[in-house]
Image (cartoon, rainbow, N blue to C red; front, side):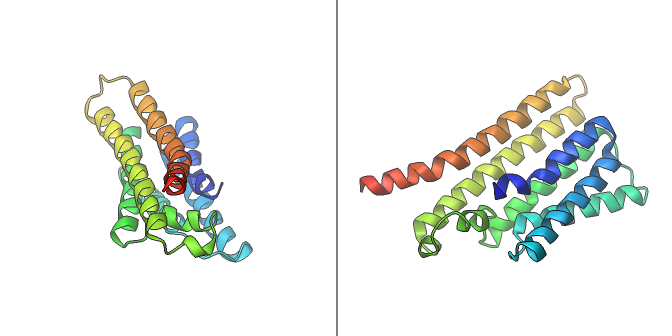
Amino acid sequence: MGLLLAFLPFIVFAIVDRFVGPTEALLLAALVSFILLLRDWFILGKAPKILEIGTTILFSGLALYALLGGPMGSIFAVRLAVDTGLLAVVLISIAIRRPFTLQYAREQVASELWDSQVFIRTNYVITSVWALAFAVMAAADVLLLYAPDVPAKVGIIATIVALVGAIRFTGWYPERVRQQAAER
């Protein structure tokens, strides 16, 4: 549940962007990100997670840019900024050797497993799949931004397929790893 809750700001952004507008969507997503960060840190007493910190910085920066009158461009340009920002957060987590899924996975497994090579490798694989999903979403944004004749539903379908695929993989892969370990 923690990983899915971390994506709440993006869900809020997508809904508000669709029905109200990008500036309002960025502001509300920044607020939700900040609330989730504070909730984990002060109410639940958990250390801030890479994804939550990155999301708060991403939406706050984009919201500030919009409020200061920066040119927002089309809805696809704003979505491209959000999706590439999210992709950057995920890639940075890999680059600093702390795949973002690791913090969520540690809340689900015994601490004895945290340093095992299999556990760490599993999180690199899952984080890489999420990076691929966000890259697909960003590619769909680029397509819609630069090929206006392409129907918007292409981007919607690409986003849904990418996210559902990443979610399903996140649930399936650790179980597969456990099964393989049990067979050995």
